Amino acid sequence: MNSEQIHGHLRAMKGWALEGWGRVTHDPWMRLAGRREQLLGRLEASLAESRRIAEATFPSPPRPARERRGASAQR
Image 1 (cartoon, rainbow, N blue to C red):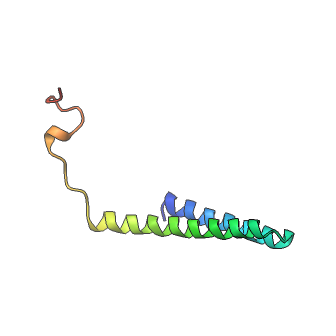
Image 2: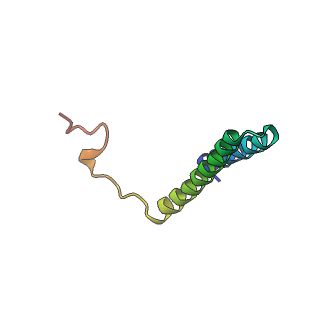
Image 3: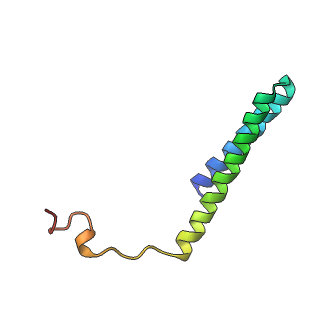
């Protein structure tokens, strides 16, 4: 689990708390904000996992010498 996944899970937990507080206070807008945070958190965690799998499956090719930083051919 990487930091992006952890951040996504924390955001989903924040949404869970907001939704619960909205239920306690009978505030429909707070509940809606909580559901939104939960969705965004789950999405963020899922995208982080997908990115990790894609980077492991398709490693980036090495860059040619002329594109590397600090190359002497820079003008």
